[in-house]
Image (cartoon, rainbow, N blue to C red):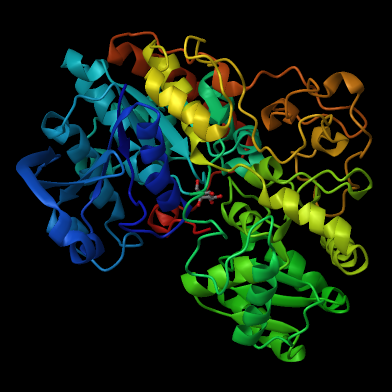
Length: 634
Ligand code: GLC
């Protein structure tokens, strides 16, 4: 299977947020499983500066977009079994920052057009082009547009991954021709029109053969107005091709046994190093060196959707608990002011660093005891997984990937890998923080076992890569392209020996984490209908245990996908419906049709949806704002 992965950032080349981590890890994980993978990204100034010597010049060509005729150079680099391509145009990309510029629309339109133009120069003609977020959203649209004239573009299937639906690439529809070189019909028929704006992400979602969000819970949440930033209608309309694939983390890079960035290594078997890291962290950030006081940590952008208002509301109550608090991050002025002021009130007990600092963040993951993420929404979240890997137990709100990775602690039966609360309510958050702090202080053995369960979770990319391969296989009508040798090697590395002849288990839903002991039933709380975030005033959803019938078969860890309710949240009294199939398995309806037809069909339904939305909801006033914003960081 030949996959072209299109992204606007990727570690180690350039990064502003979680997308870069994903784009840096997923392609090599796909290659490891037997797929042929190439990644394409812009040649930014910082890539040229840091990797210039390693880049090989391949060729150049010209890209026509509207009236512009622009140079595009192609550079490449081989790494981790993947060919990394960089598209060069100094006018657009030789700049100090990746995004946030007035001409972002034009820059990423050029990038997307160039990806399609340069297909002839890549090492293979892809079977699947996999795009990410609004910056590459025009790629599926250009492929459809070109497919009207040339069959070979119609042979390519497309996947769009939504990392954060807040950023959609919205523009005045008048610029459709001028900036994007597209016929006005794309907006007129509704395919690219939302709330009066030309919307790149909407167009991509409608045109793609498969769409996925970065966690199963986020995929469901995207059908709800609270999370979808006006796209809920489109997401519901596309639910037959929508799935949720949980991100992983680089388990080698983030390994407390070998990580050279932390003071002392440690492991499940020998946790001494963690104590040293804790003492070091307390020294580094000016907290009192108290080995038995739990350190609650936050490493986060200081922005509203990270749930910081909850902390502002109850910070003083939190600080009455026998705990220390460390906060690392930059962001909105009001939060920086608040945290700066609050830290002064609690010298030696609370420390705040307004900074983006990788070294300090590693010291925090390794040295803290509890990791707080009370996000209002969180498509996936990577920091909670990293924290767990370093034995820092997460306290999260049950939303998006946080819900899919953290199972609440049930200490009476030694289950769960963290703490969580359902409602966006400061009282509920304080309650679980208190529970966590006292578990740490009063029951160190129980806390130690909880910490061990958090550390043993499997967040490796291999699992997610398999799910993506299943999606690619579904839309291309192929079987999973894995070589039996590779498969045997993988099985050995995963410790599950199986005879080589056995068919590849494509149908089996991948467990989201291996934290839950295999023989245990699904913790009841996981099945509770907590997706729809109730406003703070609303009572918490019922905590009743789910009916026994909902528990996963005893020998399988519960796939979180199954615990997610259908798009309509169940009333608090009712148990969540369990019959919704995991969306990944659903065949995407991607019959090979003339592109124009597909586009028209999509458009018709799209304009219907638009009309319906317009009736019920107010017209948005913001136009270009969302496109230019910086991508969210973890
Ligand atoms: C975005 C999301 C974050 C996710 C990341 C990678 O940054 O906000 O939750 O983990 O993308 O998919």
